[in-house]
Length: 77
Image (cartoon, rainbow, N blue to C red):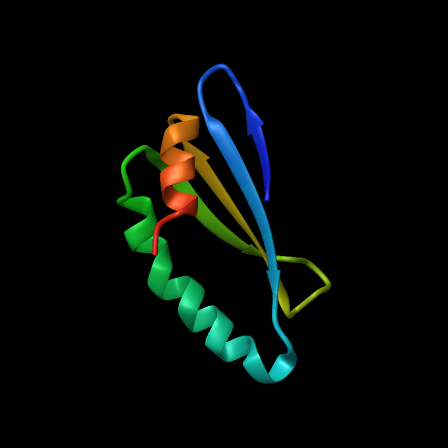
């Protein structure tokens, strides 16, 4: 995970991919987690994008109020 602190937020970027046989499971898992993550303390936004030209890969981008909020997210269930 990359984190790039700015004056107003923490941005996290995660790259995830799956084998073609697990792709549906990955999409279902990501989809089910987006709203709960967005409701976490300090989450400004959390988005998922499919990587162009790589149908089995996604990028998750989160924006957090503070480093503590991001750390809490990373160590959550």
